[in-house]
Length: 341
Ligand code: SF4
Image (cartoon, rainbow, N blue to C red; front, side):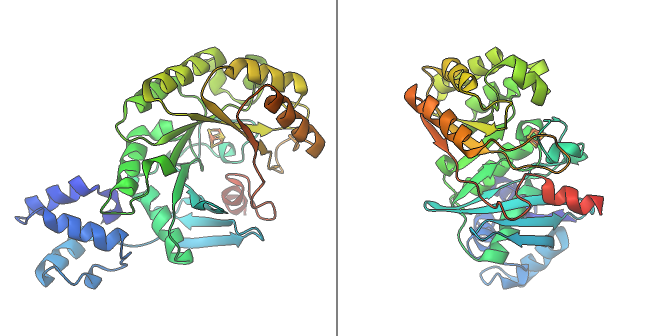
């Protein structure tokens, strides 16, 4: 049966019109779903019983089964959910001083094959539907009962490889009758699917763009990110620059620091040269080691040196505090562990 969470407000309005009812009923249902977080259509009190029964015939309102739930001492929580077809996905909840964010998975597995990534070890089986992304938020909410203020689409999968469902998801969570998560509080991260960056720049929703760059040149990026064979770093930086020009929005650059590979002062200077003059914010992230991978986290003093070099070059940079270090924090790690059992 179709999940109610797959429907945008417009889809739901069309549905109500198709069954001979006024579209404002859709807004009522939407508010019940996302403001009251109902778990059964029977909880709706302002719509007639016959209509409720029709909704029950046509749609499902079921949350995910939680297969595993890890809580870190810093408040980060990792959820492993089972989809209706038995596949497993992860979502991560992070607590910050500015609110609570959730890292959403967009695909079952990932085909991008980044060498350092636990998610990429399992090939993509399929896209997630819009509803399956929304359900991650509702299922996490069910556990924490706290408002989720920010979303990063940065979990398992390459969001721009499932573009239409991801864009619809952004509209669902942003809707003022629904979860009402501000577009400025939503970020979508890509490993560098250049044509889709141009598409994303045309979207009316003002959500943010993050780029998983992780290298300052083609030589290093080729070693760890196969996407760089299709879209060279110069093309990617050009797309970032064009995106900034057309949207007037700042872009986040994600840069995982890996020992001896991309964390030298030379790399920091190259990175500064590459991004010079662009309205970007560089987010340095200590690498979360994955047992099956040869990469090691950069040493603390090296991370500090890298950060200081970028600062000296007047780059806008932060060294992200690691979160969830005492749980299976690397993206895809928890899923992979359960699948290997
Ligand atoms: S880092 Fe992202 S794009 Fe790369 S393999 Fe992992 S999930 Fe896929």
